[in-house]
Image (cartoon, rainbow, N blue to C red; front, side, top):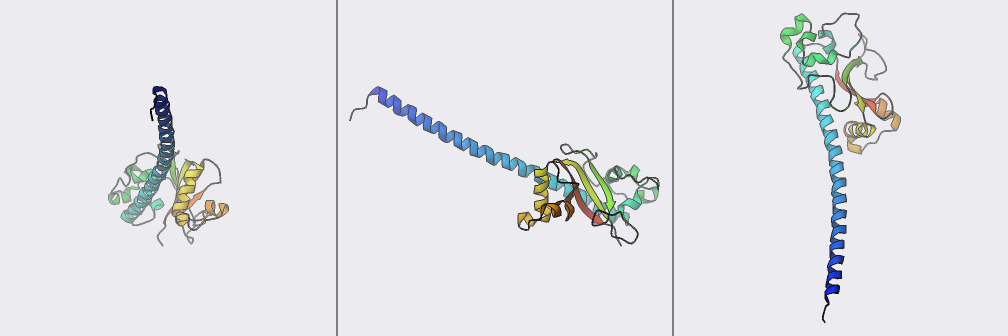
Length: 200
């Protein structure tokens, strides 16, 4: 059968359009996969930072031989803890008697400012986070980061407290129980992480 020039051109045009549609679909799928990987990479980076701070606090406390708060050089009536974290990289924050035990810097960061999510800080509270530490109570160092998007917070909570999503928490329990907590179910929210406990 003889194919005329205009039919050959029409077939080529149809093939080209089909190829373009296939490429567009593939590009869209690849874009969604890449976007998902970016989200995973961001949460993995934040998990690494949380783990770095947790390890740093443990190492610092092991070097000092006592609870983190007791080593800080600040007035007794100073109840603010916003800058307490800086003792991990700045020995000027440490009481003179403890400075010989300081083997830092304990973290590679040298600022409380996070490049994306606000500011890091720490505070001290009991395991329920609702009550201040007393001499008889348990006492933890709580790490906080001020402006974490809700979806990122959800991923961190799923990783730490929900066994990768296998043991789902109720919405109220998720923000007030476990290692990963929040100030409220807002967006963005303050990420709150329970780290080390005061030695008995």
